[in-house]
Image 1 (cartoon, rainbow, N blue to C red):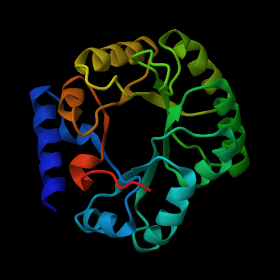
Image 2: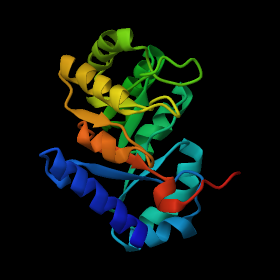
Image 3: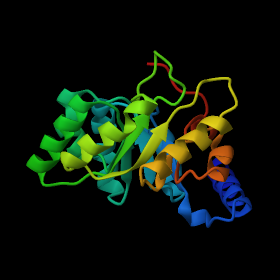
Length: 218
């Protein structure tokens, strides 16, 4: 698949420019709102890490797909309701959107009940935007401490920078916050800015439209 090869090549080039190994960056193909028919060409081309926004949509779409591709890894990149924590822990292999104490509590209980540890990112509202999810920058240390106490395996930080503003300063800030809190992984960068994110330390880039085209409206 040409789009997939192009994205992978651009990630690798950006990593090399930054003095990093291309394999240090995970491409998460954002398949939210796209039907199985649109996903299958990427699966056939070898892509195995996909991101979804909603638990129910992912359940309906991926349970049958995973029968054919059992090595697929699913990442939850959208906001998670606390009452969906058990379903999320059962289905996903990574959760990028831990952003509040109530969700920390729900996920901790769900992981203990399932006997399954799902790696998590704390989502930071890096641009202090009222309409976006994510915890405030000042609240990161407290939420991280709460998550660790609840038994969540927090591996890094995630952000979605403000739209139509140069993303680099926000990526650099997230990297600094992560370093200050002893976290090594960074989920940042989407279709329009993933190369910049890789240059600034992203370990996971979330690419949707550059792979699938415009999102389908429900």
